[in-house]
Length: 353
Image 1 (cartoon, rainbow, N blue to C red):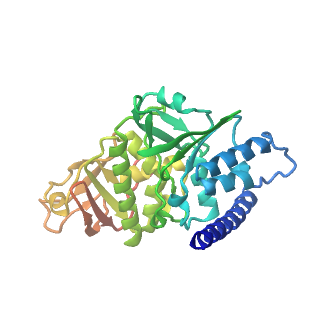
Image 2: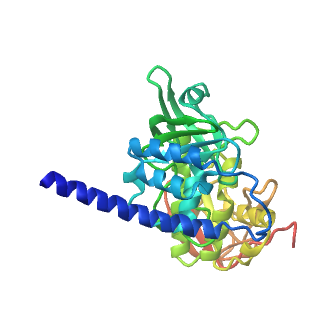
Image 3: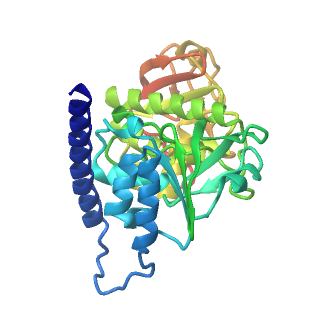
């Protein structure tokens, strides 16, 4: 009797999940409809292939991805070949992500390459793989060939070769390749954090764990800036931080000057990137250390050959400013690596002023 009740509850839970996922899939599909409805699809859906893949996923216990694959296979289509890294049910069953963001997460777990476990084992550790999410890659962070063990973004491939047929490969993974923390979701922010890859060789330029920790630290900094009233600068910083970290892989000591009003956040990407870098020094300066510097001291920024200038300083009784801008909120945050000073207005770029 108890066993029968247990089976009923499992069936009810599965039915509920299926309905929710079906609604989610429909919502994602509606959001994905192109403006030109007259354009035919360039990639026809092989429903039989996806039906077989869905059955294989269910047999392996990946019911959520199996349902999505069966209800809306278009989510996983962008090229002729595909490798899906299916997230196990327990890691995503309680997610509260909105449908559009959940779709991005699924695209980040799908590569336009057909890769079996043997193919993955033949790649060098540190290799990066492209995904269906624009300009985002995943990294092979650990390979043990003898044990046939692989980790991607430090997540174990727990069920390799769940499905290998035609143009499709599917492997099971223990958890998502990117955080599901809802606190990291803000309008206009790039939610999926991918590893830093060398654009020329598609290999990791630094240890993935170190780069992941650095990204997490900067995520905390951005969240702190936003919660302390520096919202526009936080949005601007978040928009360009991936490129900044890629260009400055040894950025271990940093001073950030956060302007209260950062109107340039609405500017084009190259200008925004340059102005944000102008507000970051690759060296940590406390307020006391800045105040002790003599007048006309040059402060190196992340913009090549662009410096900030101390006015006043230790030899001036009335205090100091930087490029004519005052620090009105010194050390709103300070750690071994970071220090943030609030400034009254944004610095002007000498190239554009």
